[in-house]
Length: 295
Image (tube, rainbow, N blue to C red; front, side, top):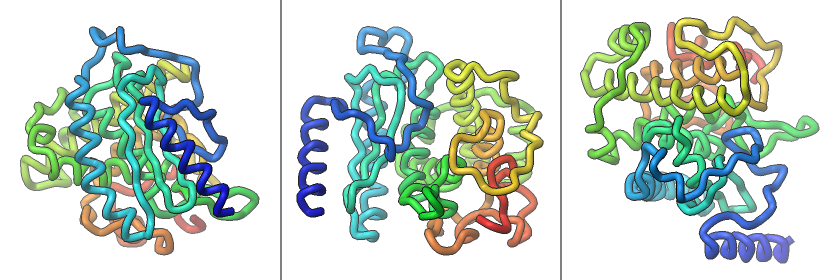
């Protein structure tokens, strides 16, 4: 087993040395998007809404803030900014105590992406490591990673809020135009202008990501804040929820008023978040992927 971990670390170093992952993708590795063959190379910079400097500054801030979280779990966190890669995706993986996140330049340069949606993608991948319950399961055995819906929820509930506090230049960017429902709900849930702007920015980052998801998955109709997914699952799902359900999750997480500094937990499913059990009327995980009483 020690030899296995030694080889895995060598392969990881080789991947970093080449500037992007040259290793075949693992079936246990989490990807933000469904596997796809789309490629957007460095020559497509004219279509990019994010600069290399912004991208690297964002990654550096996340490294600095979240590495201590992993250290407290006796693990090491590596966040790789593969700017030169043409892969349109992002990944998270754990091998023993080595935790990794990869954000690839092809995804960052996609014309549907903005700095906010890149940040939210990064936060989603971190959510597989730090998102708490529910976890994915294989043959009834719990795996290391939080489910896709839980990673989405963590992204806006915790991670975007910490990046907001860490990066002045990120916080000072102008909020995009938002639908009336987003503005009204954010103003209803938060009292300060700064909190309201963060809520709006985070919600719209989720909306921007759904545009990308729709374009890749060709899923119709396009998701909207005003049309939440009406489905009620019989058990919490581990895989990708519908695009509409993912937007609902990003929106509810942005609306949650729970303390951002209380971490989500691998044992207590309602710690640090909004839940119906704690009588939160908004900000709860949507029933289109989450069943509260058994997950």
